Image (cartoon, rainbow, N blue to C red; front, side):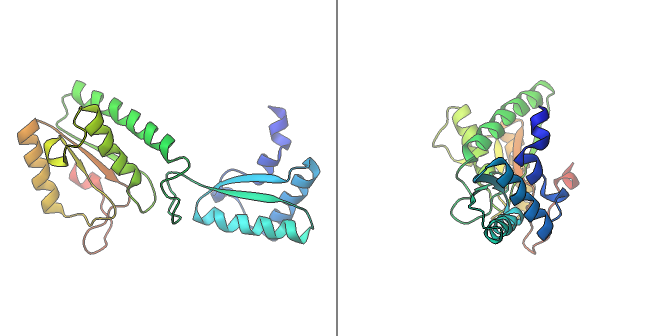
Length: 201
């Protein structure tokens, strides 16, 4: 454990919010990497951190140090084109769906009619959509449409309409006795305003 305090990973930091992106910081990273003889670095990153990857590469070039940097898009906040549902996406889906099964059991045990699960992520609905797949598979209804199952999926790619949503909730509760709402943290209405689901509590 003590070796972690002097490792290259510790020098590179793990939280972009706590990291000060100064030329000196990138020079220090290269210095530590060269001292450890590390020539390959994998950086799990979002769009903000991706800019730091370029700074690190440039600092290594300036120091004449051969460094290979691999950018690994962060799975749940990945909005990078062509990769937003790759790499760690499967692991995220597995985690989200395991959570939803537990969430469902809790709602059932507590006789909660309307349960809302908000899933974090970038401006895409890949993880939210995976929750729909979970429900169809778990209920043995693969190939069924959303109307035949007791859930509502709200995707960030589609504007949220309050009237339509409330009508759907009412219809589902009347038909099934309960409804599960799987939503996204960055929903917007037709005017582009953010939606806060706590307003519907």
